[in-house]
Image (cartoon, rainbow, N blue to C red):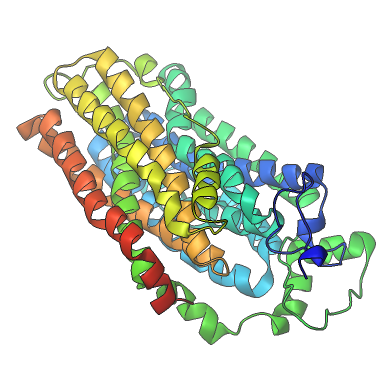
Length: 469
């Protein structure tokens, strides 16, 4: 039996899942073909938060155009679009389990592009707010598709490394648009910023339509259905969903699909870690939506910066292979066996950086110190990246056949966590000082870390055995 197992090219690792003897199995694709899909899905993952962040860079221009305040713009558009990012992910995962990854990704991005163009041309605030919220709901699909695609095409031992690339897309995307468009909006209309965002979305849609392929492949079917159409016709039918509709009889039924996310959410090996990630990532989203207010407001609340200074981002990735190194080390020390809880050791590296970053950021805002603000923001960003990759990899290892639901629930948790922060952060900082605000937020994150991570590492194997799917 061992001699029949398929190994990695270096012969050191057993491939899992074992590729089928079928050229249509995505696990059998060439490295180039897989890399193309990873690049496209990473570019796609940038779209939702990038589009949402355009409003952050444009907040003062929007307030001037629609004759209102930056606070109203923030509450009416930024916060609610973030909120709908979470709910959209759960909806799109249901469709992907029934009809495949490619058609759902294509149609969602097509509608998201149409709504973004409508927001660019919106004549009034009500229209703009509605179009921006719809853009978020439809645009969030790539943020839950990526985990599906990575697990569909890459074997287990490469998944953490590839997840690091994909998650970097949506982790950095909220910071990209303020960085890119802060300078532009100061000199031109905010509509130009949204027009450029529309062009980027159109490029991504083009790549999806002409270069992506369906990655869903059920290797558990005893009898594979015959492929009736071929060539360009098959390509077109797969893209628009005709093939997915025909194949739906082989996929889970609607009653199972509708409750699948809830069936994952309550399980203790998932719930506590995701609640921890919701605080970590949620506060970072809140910081991103309110930093522009801190920067643009007059002292003592903010720096009184012009919009030229809003375009500042310090980001740094530490250790692309950190998760892979921990995995290999754990396997060697554990007699060749892997346990999902080993992924969480990366969180112990991320949390000291998180404390340092958030406290430095709070002190920088309170004391109007530009260097401290930039340094704190950059260090916190590194910590969030490390933690998010570790949590995604852990949850995917716990539920390998529920990658879509895992991704949707994590997307929902971080979006809902960030949705609420912008409502209270600026008024609280005005009253008590930014250092207290960020200090309390850091304390909540660290408290949840000590509750969730050590307990999950100690009891995780029991949870997975007792509450397995």
